Amino acid sequence: MQTIYQSLTSRLSLVSLTLRFPSRRTPRPTVIIPTLQNLRSLTVYDIDPLCYPDDISLLLATSKELEDLKLHWSPRMRDIGEESVSMMTYFGRCLTARHTIQLKRLALFNLYTRNSGDFNACVGHEGLREVTLINCVGSGDPMTVFLDETWRMNQPSDIPKKLKMMRSDTLDRANVSMLARFEGLERIYLVNAKRNSRSKSNSVVATPATPSPSSSSSPTNCLQQEVISLASDYLAAIQSHHRTMRHLLLSDQWILSRDVVQRLLQSCPKLEQLGVAIAVPELSSIREIMPFAPHLFALRILVRPSSELWEEIESMDDEMHAFVISQELWKPEYKNLKWLGMADLVFELGTVVSMGKKRAKPDGEPRPMRIVKQVPREMVKDIEIWSMDSFDM
Image 1 (cartoon, rainbow, N blue to C red):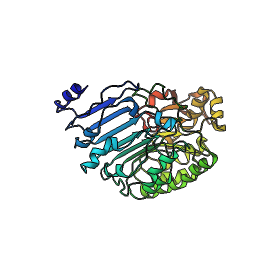
Image 2: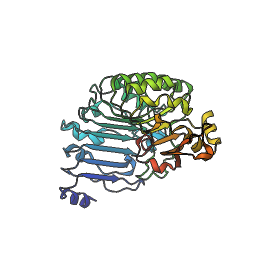
Image 3: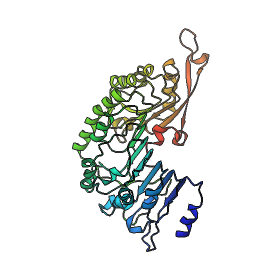
Image 4: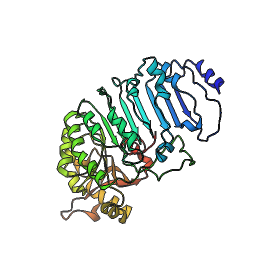
């Protein structure tokens, strides 16, 4: 209601606003949301032109302090290939007023529309620190590829040179090109989580806690080869330009050799969290690369579901996994490592203790071991290489 928005304008202390639009097509008046002059953060869920959402264009054009913008569209448009969204519906007033929103954080979810190039003039790139693009462009779905391609054709010439975090579920050469044109990135999260099956237009939209995007069709072998070939380009850009990297979650399709991982760690000595698929995931092989990661406290070994290694891990008892890990990770190379993930398993690594005289070495010395405990995924919800590997906002 207009009265609700008007009451908010009187709250000068209001700096953050979250809206969730209705998902039912019930005709009702569309309200223009007025200026909130001190607004710094705006999050909007379930945008769908057929469900009569309120107009946020004035709010975007007049909130001069806005720094954080998250826009989540209903997945319905991408699911059925419906071109009903126009970016000028939301940013047209900015374009008319020649106002460029100077954001620090931008996140777009489920966007399906063509890009005429006008959007690039509405959002500045100079001050961007964090960018999240989930299920927006480059999904490889034949139903959406024509509109997605317009975003590649109209890429902004400006590069966000102050960018510190990039999160995306899409791999393409445009991202590689951008990575090679600036320095200082600290966090990259390539989302490996699998999308749900296609939703129907009358399906229930996910709650704000888990706003799931739509599903894309299975990529062809050609597309899979293209994704794999991108691995060397991504790694080269990271090693050459982003030695400041602290968090790195790579694609589970890139199965890297030990030597490649070692060179990556040498190039990025500040790494604290790493998610990577390793060709030889035996712990003895991992031990050899650990000295090159003195600050690494969370290591996640990525394994593609239904692969041979995945089935091998699943076939072993959880207690056996913990025992094998405890026999290896007491060694000094792992002293800073606190969390270890393999496939869907997560282990918390504790202190090093003695196994006692019954299991002593042949020379009588106590055999050391590390206390290892398998924990639920909930325990690592605050560790980014796990928490960012999702479609959550």
